[in-house]
Image (cartoon, rainbow, N blue to C red; front, top):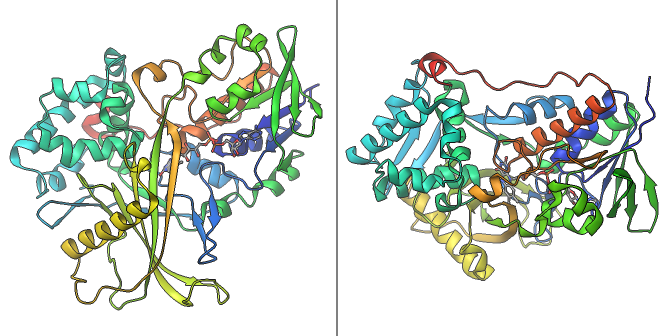
Length: 483
Ligand SMILES: Cc1cc2nc3c(=O)[nH]c(=O)nc-3n(C[C@H](O)[C@H](O)[C@H](O)COP(=O)(O)OP(=O)(O)OC[C@H]3O[C@@H](n4cnc5c(N)ncnc54)[C@H](O)[C@@H]3O)c2cc1C
């Protein structure tokens, strides 16, 4: 039985994909409108004109605790699309590699053996980090709230973390997870990351990387939506959300058409949403106040292609590079260029990818400088920890610099408390997207959770039972007492 509902979802990023697929499967009439000609929003791919290779805009990683996005892949009929790395490799300033991996000990002791063996941290750093981790664990989930309004940098200062522990451990982990410098990151958010991503269970440690380009992950969506009675329109830009008498009435698209809707889920970022709502609507709905005040943090990434060498450029799947200009180096392996690729090289080449999060300085650099630095940093890392490529280095073929100036919102204490809920004052308007109130950092997992929150709100308003959604990873061992 379909009630008298007509649902529009604005934006086919992960939040929009997750919400629309689940709504359609509930038997509700849903139309997903996306301004671009491709799916995935910020978590997508493009065809590099120089190599003709489909590249992810930037490497996107998930953790085992990202239960909602892993569920979305299942919903799309995708199995085994994530390659898991449960050993995480850090470079040290002594030109060695420290590997963190879970030991068969009750959580949180699963991390102790590899943590104690880290050569990149002094004994003083280790004692300080262990102390802070104990504080983080024993705070429990509820204790995070005691630090609302503060940044994680302030908390680390309170806990006496030495500069070296900040540089060699905290900064890179916080920035990678929350996409901003610890000085800008809300303390409860970072505490959640450490509690759930490191301490709760040995199963939570890992880096999951898609085996195929991101854009290919979403290919089943259109068919799945249409099988369930929904529809997808690419290249359709919403210009305005309409309302009357305290209730949403639909959207206007760039062709001037008014498309009536009883329920509208918007998944666009706050600065975009600000352009879709008029002053009357803002006055009616508290969630829309200050949309123009949101600030963002950049990510800068570089794709590098080299001639194939034997042995290859990198052996390890990735390197976390604390206290260096880039945070991560990913070994993207060997890629075969199409025969008609414009670049003067065909057949297999090797591909490395470097990225830096919370990149407020790097984003201002000229791309040429970023490229030069990426090449230097790549060889610095692989020469020091894996093998020597001094003589001769593999021939460089091509590099592409990606600057995402507004990659995600900056998770400051002020903005964290401004994150809107899915439902609010204006009936029929549901706000979703990675920046909304999920409790998660602005990530793919946060976006899918936001999509699911909007779906549940719509379903509930229509007197439908929301579908069963995945739970969080349960804490284990000693951590169970606290988390
Ligand atoms: C460089 C980079 C690296 C990242 N790395 C990671 C990572 O490693 N792991 C991780 O989990 N997350 C990562 N993220 C974050 C992750 O990509 C985002 O949190 C997530 O994709 C956001 O999804 P969303 O659906 O909320 O928003 P979006 O992806 O922004 O989706 C919104 C959609 O709305 C569309 N749209 C906008 N305006 C309109 C309009 N007027 N009409 C119709 N459609 C419209 C947009 O085109 C877009 O498709 C990264 C982000 C970036 C930029």
